[in-house]
Image (cartoon, rainbow, N blue to C red; front, side):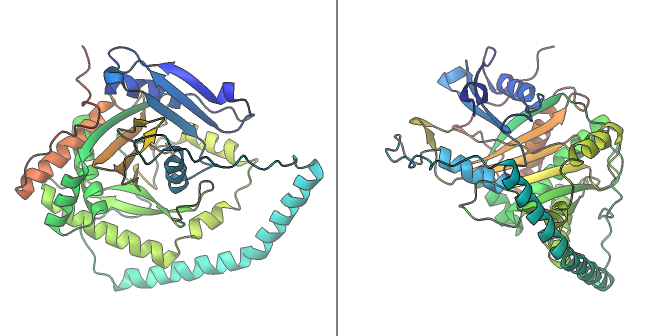
Length: 401
């Protein structure tokens, strides 16, 4: 492992604020990882305003999912005001496996997969049967998107290789207060705010928001705080009521949609999706994904991806410097150029949106729309308008003409 390659320095252009940092992150995200090397990079970003600096990590999903990445991040930080003296013991030495060892392990994996396949197929059949029975028992709720029928929107097109990145911060206490006031979950509020923000964007770019859209929401099947590698995830398909103008009605319909999505996921089997992915041949996967991404101008399965990551409740430090905020995003799927991830961190809800250069005139339109939607919801509840989080970077200013 060549640390000179994996650890890099980058300068944020003046004036070194949120907009400039986000642009640098978009440029880093646009460059594919070198598959001949370990699939990670860390960039140390200098030149920021207010004596700040940023650590920008890029890790391939094959190494870690959201929970594993959050656990790794917690280990990278000191949860105290000063650097901790304790350090991990040096790693034990190990010999590189021989070609014969690798072939032997691969054959054992194949045998295990073959043995487990009948059980997997049976579990899938039982899950599908449970889902069909439950669907017949439920009352129909108007305004929910139908599975595998995501409508075409400006967000859904052949995704460009150029990535854009934008961030914003809300006060975590105000998000929790809003959820408690309305008697819904924290995640319901996150998704309802996303629906409100996406409605604003759809009206601006498509001129209409007359149908609910579909969001895929990753769900971890292993939330252990010890795991720092691997993928233990599934996904829920959640209807987002972007067609509803009233923010309180949007929350109500979002709560119904999330309840049904959770039930569907439990009935089908939370681990089923991940187990099936074990059978995707690794040599074929990159070729299949590349071919799909070049021709997918409309993803029938989903319109957007939205993740909610619970971060550290205690402020972390790196080399004695306090970590002011945390942002992350996942990947863009074929035909779906919008991925939003929110982190709960100490007193903040940190919002990040990854897209491509074909979607928005200004990447911060996406995060600004989320802030507007939260403001609209607070006013509809009769609550005080959102406040600025002092510990976070200042909001991104409007772009220069």
